[in-house]
Length: 105
Image (cartoon, rainbow, N blue to C red; front, top):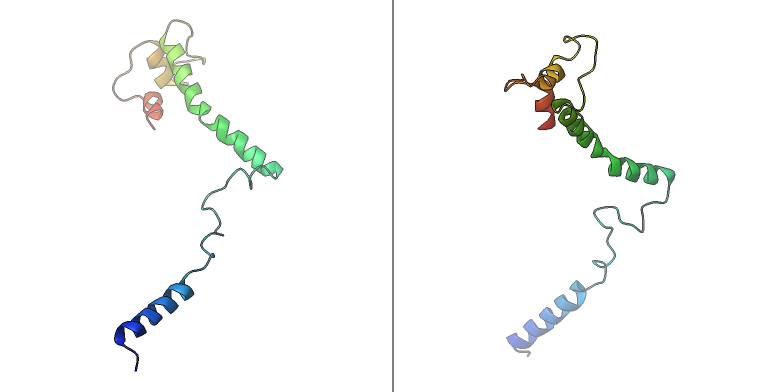
């Protein structure tokens, strides 16, 4: 008759042998990588849009900064065309200004 310890060792050994496999090595990455990207025209277009997308907010900040200085004036034919920009140009904006609030988003 086998001892209890010997049976436990056999069961434990079978458990270890059957539980080990290499299937955890070959998994798909959760995000795109350089080996699988830039294979299509759409991939290049997406990368280009991603690189320049942040500049849209920078443009708006620079535009408002220039209007606030004496380098430029807010355009338009009348004050009513864009009152928020005209207020910035005249340095008469209050705490509620749509253009300035947009910069915070």
